Length: 142
Image (cartoon, rainbow, N blue to C red; front, side):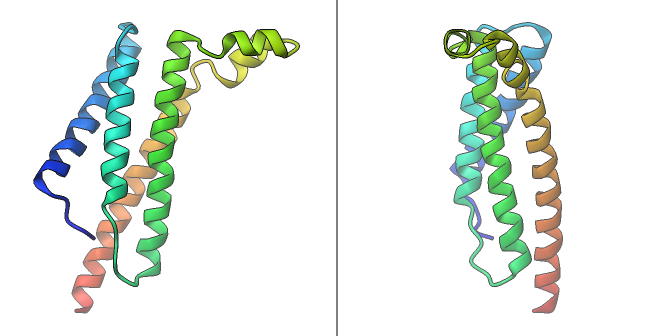
């Protein structure tokens, strides 16, 4: 795996911290600015993690990197849904153009950021653990 620079590591760690703080404060009830904190954290974490590439030939690690990228995308989508849950940007579109629009909005948008965040977190934990194990196996072969 490509090693991150010191600045990239700091940005990735700060992004992860912002995601934790943003999600935690949002759940507690401070919902004015925390979705933006979470969104900035999710984007910075995902972008830095996507920059960390693997140049080897191990198919398992390449597959796990693709799965990890999917988890990063879910983090960003979770941030977008959190912003939508707070500010309701697209609610007027649902109520104007769809029959039973508010019901569909609540079904598909409202508070579903939590589900995406949970799935992304499980994916990240799994892939990080598996990639570490695969890299250890690869190092032992050499």
